[in-house]
Length: 305
Ligand code: FAD
Image 1 (cartoon, rainbow, N blue to C red):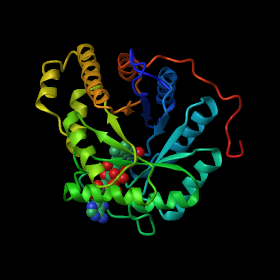
Image 2 (cartoon, rainbow, N blue to C red):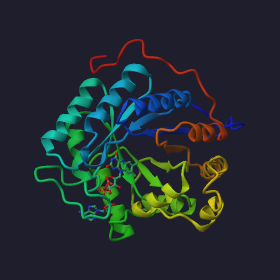
Image 3 (cartoon, helix red, strand yellow):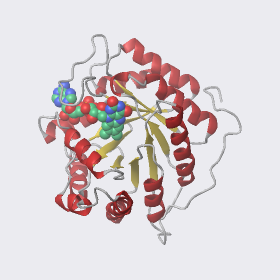
């Protein structure tokens, strides 16, 4: 894998990139330009989200299929319990298995009406993320990642309940957790201590949100329970009409954040790319990842291969 600059004895740095499935031809072109620019950083996997309400169910499958066909990257397909029966969800899992997908990011999802509404399991559907993890593991030997919340999920009644939920996901078979994004590393370190004290020993991958648009990220953070520290808001203050400077500031913010995490021995990072390559590529370069010539599959990978 890839090592940070000058750290011959240092830890391997493992990155993964998250994309969302494109909704039209232009978005598809953008996504693929992004994948081509980022694959040189040899990500451990690239994940493709699943639309709220299951709306892009097919697009997720089509995108991971193209990743398998045209790259040597390992795709991870996100999947939620929302708006579907067990049979329908199992069908998606089988379809992934049949084309050679080996990794699923299993989530409860949010109500289709939007964040803030009360979540109700679909009648005849998987009740929770825990249930979904178990269902996926029953279908095949998938690697299963789940979500984790350093600042607690907004619906969680307490920090303890949130940890209990993660522990249940691990008991059901989860292999790794990927965190919601956070900007104050102290929150992540405290969370990691609590996770380990709770006896949870799976890898916890730090979710990193490159700030392409501060206002948008602040709005999103508010709805998903991630705090925007004052110092961060101050960095972007006055840059509302200066996107170029804002982007340079954003690169600095993420590089500082990751550098501190690396110094503390954290070496797995999952980037919420929003299908854009520039900032994520700049951050990867800055933390010392060297572009490598991407492999190409000799022939499409299939289940039988
Ligand atoms: P869970 O872990 O099942 O629950 C979240 C929290 O709610 C728990 O920590 C728990 O404290 C509380 N809770 C839930 N049920 C109970 C209960 N019965 N009793 C007590 N407490 C309970 N959304 C999408 O739609 N598509 C995606 O592709 C997607 N990808 C994501 C990837 C990552 C890495 C992350 C962090 C989030 C992603 N999300 C996605 C968002 C996710 O669906 C939402 O955060 C959702 O609100 C919770 O899903 P979960 O799997 O984390 O839920």
